[in-house]
Image 1 (cartoon, rainbow, N blue to C red):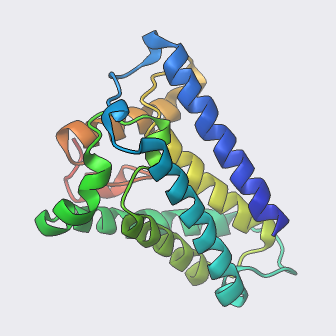
Image 2 (image 1 turned 180 degrees about the vertical axis):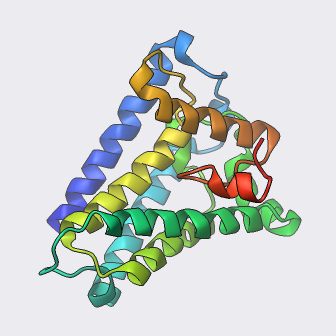
Length: 211
């Protein structure tokens, strides 16, 4: 489980750096975050982070053979296929979460933030957390099993992209165009709707939900 511990440390560090950057560089903010008004904000985020770790550990112990091949070798297309399949699955899950009844009972917890910041990537209903990870793990099982390095890379990519969506930052660097796209797109989702995709905008373009 050393690789999972390493992934947790990397993700935790990434959230902390992103959040501190938001607090320090006012001119880089897309909007004023409103997470400060949320009840038990950091406790909720910490609990969901712990829940995510538990889901990964249970999944690895229970479904190890379909998720990880310890003797497998890296192929460049496996992580690409997993992330594209996840993007398609999560697009529809996200749209489902915006159906009126489900939105009111589950997804509204996350949407209490009109302009979330990095730590708020983990401020959500635990049912939504588990559902999102189920889509990711299901995508891995469909394409995999993956070698340990690829599995770890997919988990990290999924988590870092999710954090980037919530940074609320527009960085003044050309190489940061993808991070800026993610942040602006998801900030618009919270304040205007649409933009249900996570990794690419392709499904929003196809199904005309781009805002």
